[in-house]
Image (cartoon, rainbow, N blue to C red):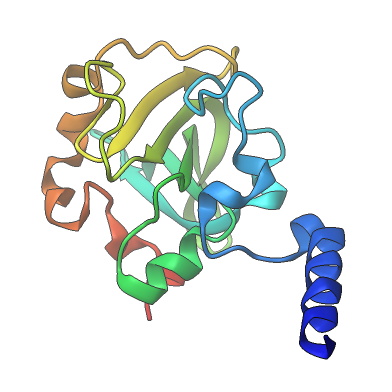
Length: 187
């Protein structure tokens, strides 16, 4: 009886803490739930505060000094812990990449590029079981979608193979994700 009572108290306490407990299964985190059940239908609200920062990328300018774009990437709650555990993102994990046009200017520290204007978001949702066969936004273990800055509730992607995957070919060996640029993933 004593063990059963402690179990019941643990369940009540865990339930009461809700979002404060970092789940190791990303699909369990309430911030991942889409109102319509489709996680590719919108950019998650509050991802900048509820998701974990993974890292940033600078895309060099073609002709001038500095960066043309800056990319900042976030992972849904529990995704980083799960990745550190076994080297894979769990099903349901969400990655959000902000894509900014960059501005470059001289400063006292040297030539500096900074985020200037949000162009949009790139969203990936882990689906290692490939449960969405036949859907052109899902495949190769992920859901793939681009959202223009003006509308975080409507993807403009119609086929991930022709619109998204090409940029990720060099990262195919790491489940299509450039994990080497994300310090929190290092074990």
